[in-house]
Image (cartoon, rainbow, N blue to C red; front, side, top):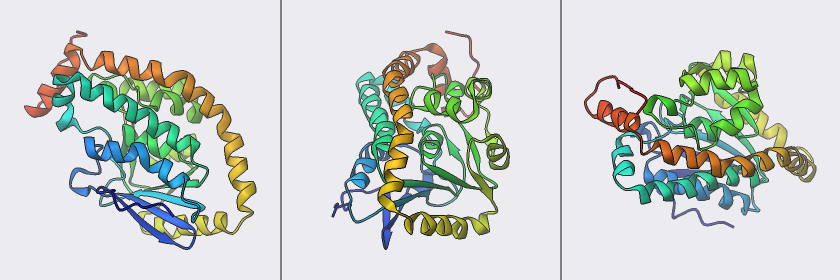
Length: 265
C-alpha cells in the first residue's frame, strides 16, 4: 500500500479498486505552483506502485482542472535559472510517469485545462470533459516554447497541421470542438460528468484487468519512444525561451495587468 500522506496539494479518494486523484489548489485554479509541480512529478509513480488499485480518475477541485503554469511564479524562475533547471527534471518525470503508469488513467476534466494541465489531461488514456471546459497550451503567449509535453502529444491526437495551429497561437479550444476533432474522447454536460466517468470506470474495472493493462502498455510503447526522443530537446528550447526578452516582457505585463508587447527579442 502506498502512503499518500505527504501530498499537500493532491487529494486521494479510494473506492474499491478505483482511486480518484484531485489537484487541490482551487484558489489558484490548480495552477502548477512549484509545490504542486513537484508533487505532480512523483504522483504517477506512486499510483503505478499502488497494487490496491486498477483505475485512476484524475480531476481538479473547484472550477478548473488545472490552469497550467504559475504565471505569478515566473519572475522567480527567470531570476533563478536553477529553479527552472529543477522544473525541467520534474516536467519530464510528469510525462514519463504518466506513460509508465500501468493503471487505466481517466481524465475527468471538470473545467479549463491549460498548459501543463492540458498536457497531463491529454496524456491520460480516456478523457471526459465538461462541455464548458476549454483546453489549450498557451506557452507562446508568455514567451515560452511549448516544451513540457504539448509538442509530443498534440500532434498524435489531432495531426500536425491542427496541433501547430493551436500550439503556435496558444488559442483555447472548447470541449465540444475538442471532442469533434479527436483531442478528447467526450464532452458532456457538467451535471452528467461524474455519472459518465463513474460508469466508464466501472466498465473498465469489471474487465479482464491484466489484459487491459497490458494492452494499454503495448499502445503506449510508441508514445514512450516519442517522448523519450523529444523531451530533452523540447525542455531545452523552453529553457532557452525562459531567458528571452519577450518572456520577461510577458512577466512584466502580467504584473502590470496589461497585454504584452512582443518584439522578437
